[in-house]
Image (cartoon, rainbow, N blue to C red):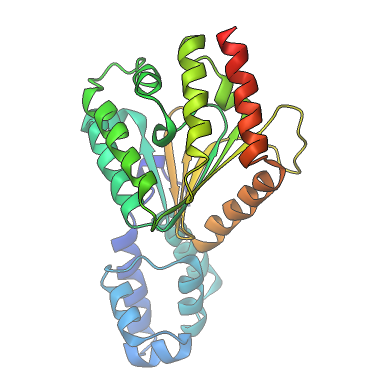
Length: 277
C-alpha cells in the first residue's frame, strides 16, 4: 500500500468500517468476536464505531479471531499502521497558526503523567528563557506572538508536582548559538536552576560520550502512549505501543549515558562561564 504523508492518521474510520464488515462476513457477533480476542464487547464496539483507535496488536488479535486471509491481513495491517501514525506538516501548522500548536501541546501535557524529552539540537520551549523562545521562532514568516506567549505560559506545568519530566539534552543542543553568548549563558543558568525542581530531571550528554545508538531526531514521549518526532519539515506522531516502546528503549540508552544533578550543573556552569568570557 502506497500513500501520501498527509494520509497518515486519516484512515481511522475506514479501518473501523473494514473491521466491522469483516466480522459480519465471518458471521460473528460482537460478543463472540470479543470472547475470541479476550477483549470486552464494549471495546470491540468502540473500535468498530471509530470511537477508539485500535493498536496494531488489537488489529492482529481481531484478524486472527476472524481467520482472515493473508492478503486481508496485509491490507488491514497497513491501514492500521496509517491510523496509528500522523504527519503534521509544518506548512499546515503555520496556516492554522503556531498558537494552535501550543494549545495542542498544552492538552497533551495536561493528559500525561510522565513526559520524556530527547533534545538533539535545541532547547525545548518548556525550558527556554523568553529571549531564547523569541529567537527560536524568528525565522518563521508567520506572526509568532501567540506562539511565544503560548510557549511561556506552558512552562507553568513544570511546577505541577503531579507531573514528572525527564529531559535529556546533548551538549550541542545546549550550546547551539540560537541567541547571543550572554543570553545563552542566561539560558544555561535557567537549565541549572530547573534541576532543583523535585519532579524535573535534566540530563546532559557531553560531546565525546559514547552511546550504543546514534540519535537522529528530537523526540518526546508522553507516558507510554504517544511519541512525537520533530523534523525540519514537520512532526510525526506515533501511537502504536510497539513504536512507543522502541522510543522508550532508545531514550533509556541516552538516559544511561547522561549526567544529572551536580555533575550536570557543573557542566552547565562551565559552558555558561565560557559564554560570558
